[in-house]
Amino acid sequence: MLLARYFFHRLVLLSLLVSLGMGGLLARNLWAMHQNLLDNAERASRNLSHTLAVGLEWVLADVDRDVLQMRSTLQNDGLQGIDAQAMLAVSGSALLLLDAQGRGVRDMAFGQEQIDLVQRDFFQALQRQPDMGLAIGVPQVLVQDSPQVLPLARAWQQADGRLGGVIVAFVPLQRLQQWVSGMHMAPGSAINLIRMDGQVLLRFPALSALPRAHTLAGSENLRRYTASQAGVFTRPSVLDGIERIHSFEHVTAMPLLVNVVQARDAVLAPWRSSAWTLGGIALLLFLGNLGLALLFVRELERRRRTQKALQVEKDRMQEMALHDPLTGLPNRTLLQDRIEHAIAAAQREAGAIGLLYLDLDGFKEVNDRWGHAAGDHVLVHIARQLQQVARMSDTVCRLGGDEFVLLLPGCTLVDVREVIIRVLQACATPCWWHGENLQAVYGVSGGVSIYPEHGTSFAELLRHADTALYQAKEAGRGQVYYFQAVPSY
Image 1 (spheres, rainbow, N blue to C red):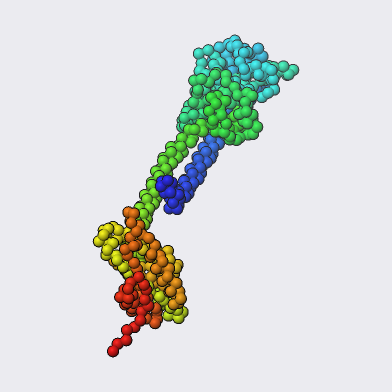
Image 2 (image 1 turned 180 degrees about the vertical axis):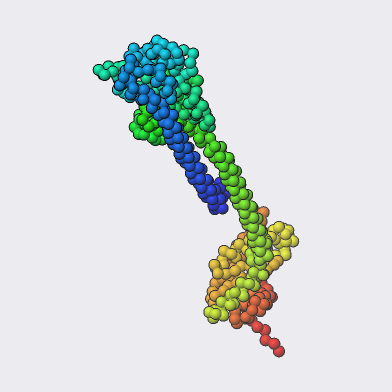
């Protein structure tokens, strides 16, 4: 319960509010860092895919130019009308000439003849559609014991429109790999060279689990690749299902596109590290702030309890200083204060004040016969009886010993007489002590003084009431006398 009160203290709530504000600001900054990191990664991917697409276009366009030049010559003169070996010798690119049956033309490449490439993907594509333009095959070995190459092929047609053959240029795969190997790729990132039908021709770095003829045909990623010339999006990869940032751009005039992918987790790895570090620091600050607030509130609560205890003790000491410890009635000090206030009020309103001074007759005999405990019992009994007959505005006081005073503000002589009658009746009430009625032994005598007739100060009123009391005792006790000034001679 105490801990709950601490937590709902306004200082703790303020501390929580400040901590939440700091946490919200940190979360906002972390989110901005998160978005900036992804935006920078997308921008870098776009720039890289554009650079690769342009560079690949330059490389492949030079090779394709030689293929086009050779095709133009073959279209005009045919295989029989040209010196193929001379043409190949002056060509800037290594070319391979195939006839309509997919066989290599003698002396035109590698010094070999009768090379059968009819089953290769690029040849079959051109055989089905000679006018398709440039055909690019999957990386392969065209001639036994030669390095793997990327084939670029175009068909040439005879005068009657029939397929005359195929011209094949090849780009060494090692050359392309060396070109992209100088680029630093983060873990999970890769560069893909993809044919427009979805065939993945080249991937760097290569995946050991990647099939030799892997294709993206029918995938959502390929649909996005072919929908526009360039773009960037985030989706799981078809290869391994890892969510990646895909940036792509088509190679101009080539049935190819370059795709740069970055694993989203790898891109966000530095951010996650920073987020955990900053989050941990923020949590420590939050807990420290809350702890300090709780300690401060606990100290305030301790001081409050101490002050409350001091106030209670102060009130108790003041109560003891102004009240009789036995009966709980106001003592002489408090009586004097109240009389002075009553006199001040009476002076403003031209009112009267009565002071009834009481003393127990036979009280000594009670103490002698039954002991002081019985005497104290009598004093408490008389105090309660006087409080019962007193008015709300009256003050019942014990001066000490067996003497009591009733302050009667704002009362007339008639009021005083009525109070005296009630007081005498109340004091005559039996007081039982272990089966004996002590009231049979003691009685009450009293004296009355009236403000302003008998005095205008506390000392005068009390002295004159005391004088009237002794006059009552001398007259026979058990009665109350009004003060009467004794003439001086």
